[in-house]
Image 1 (tube, rainbow, N blue to C red):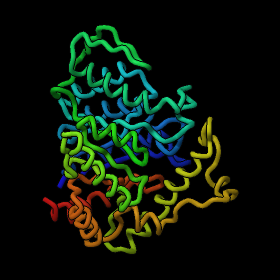
Image 2: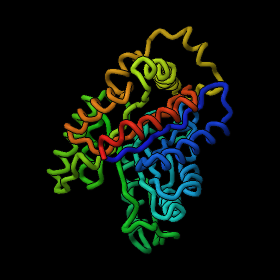
Image 3: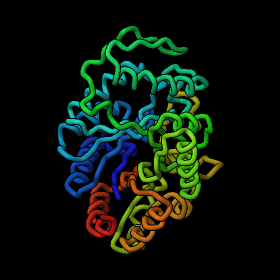
Length: 346
């Protein structure tokens, strides 16, 4: 079984952004030391929820500071960018990492991110699908041309070319939109599954994707799907719950709060002020613990992972990094996971 780590690079109030990046770098370096297969970064804009706005810049920095661990994007949001630039930047990071880049693409979720970029979100499906075709074409075809609804390319040759041939591994995100899932299944690329869905719903999505992939003649197996869950391991169940509660609650609060901004963002407001005035509550800690997380003692985590493995999951992404999680506790959780959980899945 393969294990990766994931971070949306959260930025709680009271922490300097430079420290957030320093902590992220240390987490990825430690993940490599502990034997994790990969480290995944999210692209988000205009929000404390995640400051990986220049996701590929951060990936390039991590490439220079590591030697073995694969570096993934979960996910880049192509409708917000020129696909030629994305093809160039991903190929550059692939070269800088000596062929260790995995590229995840998705449509994103936040309307205000589209508003900030002055992109019509109603066009996101078309832009997303067309971008994937353009990027793949540039990665693989000299003097590539494309005349589409949203993008035009005239005999462009990608420099530098990607190191991995024919191109870096690609993963595509889908959740509840059937058109997106149909497109993903038709590409032959694996699905990538985030933490926004409850585990039973996310597993059902994976099974549906495998079925559609088979219908399209690609037959991508469940084992190739990176499956992400919230993670925290403690020496005891009580310790794990105590140490993760505040961080899980921060993520859920921030997820709900930022959705209330059709434009602008919450960055210059205060979370506690909003908490005192909100009328709708986000999912509780106990709900996330039961439905979207693997949190507990090593024995509890092993049991939950084995249950996922019985469903066909063989690539698990561990979201140790949650907003407000004390850095030392996060690192100890990773260490405990690597030493007492991972060996049961070697």
